[in-house]
Image (cartoon, rainbow, N blue to C red):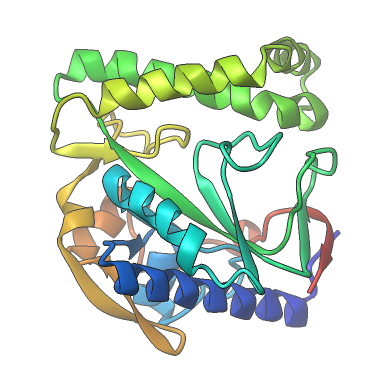
Length: 268
């Protein structure tokens, strides 16, 4: 199903309200957060959403993320929003949180069978340390990839077109969810057992440049940046971050790459 252009804008505005809710909670509880990835690129290049973007991304260092989850229990406007992660939502197979809007629906293609409410959402990513030693970091990256593939397998076994890989995902999906997240917790504890100059989202791929992480200072040194109709926290060193993440970020991608994520159903 294609999202109508006017509906895409409505979805973006719902997400903008959720970004403001994150900002409100973080400011009230002295939590450091920042917009990242395509949301940050949109702020720099478009002063708002990338016109074809259908999601929004927020990141926090792990300690701030844990504070945010606790703050949501008492401060989140539960008449409008709900927070999901694997500890609060049965069948949730992502290593990060989502803030969702009540009374909406936004189901990604291939995820129709996932057993939880799926309203319009923004992603809330925890950032964990990455080993300084490049060889240990390679092992760390391999562990991150294993966890990501196992968690994705519940979707991969439905959407993967290659039959061999599809069967591989089916076998991975048999691994009990409880055991996968136990391994994820071990990986998280290992990641944060030592301080580091680098961080990453454990269950998300990093740019393919051999670093396997992002500079932590990008998420510590923050500025306010204008996005749509408000100011949000974002990396102060925007140029180095965006070049690392996207390369020549000032140039618009070819038309064939200006696509929204495929959805099977949505209601706004």
